[in-house]
Image (cartoon, rainbow, N blue to C red):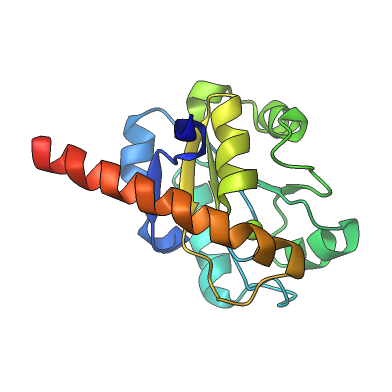
Length: 172
Ligand SMILES: [Mg+2]
């Protein structure tokens, strides 16, 4: 079934997520992917807008944990400005490190959301353990070679997902 690859929400960027709606759903823990979700994969650190955004989320009562498949060095340098919890080499879509992130944040699958740009790591992994999955458009078209390979299939799945959600909206 393709459904396992469908996100619960699909938005343009992390700045378009309806965080107040998440709060109404009792979601407290936010797991963020880094590469092409928060910054381009080849950009070392986030900008002021991102730092400010994270600060606002923290002020609103959210707990944040970065969960990245990238290296310790990459995650460490990226997190210097932000200083949030972080897990590197997470091996998404395996769920082990999502569980670890929830333990750190003190949340459960019901009170957690994963936000990422990839269907086969972020969305699938999140869906596997029943946390809310939020897909964002990649911040840039550039991708690491391994990701490039997955994008073709990802596009096909998104097409079916978007057709399905448009149909559902029409029937509402
Ligand atoms: Mg990513």
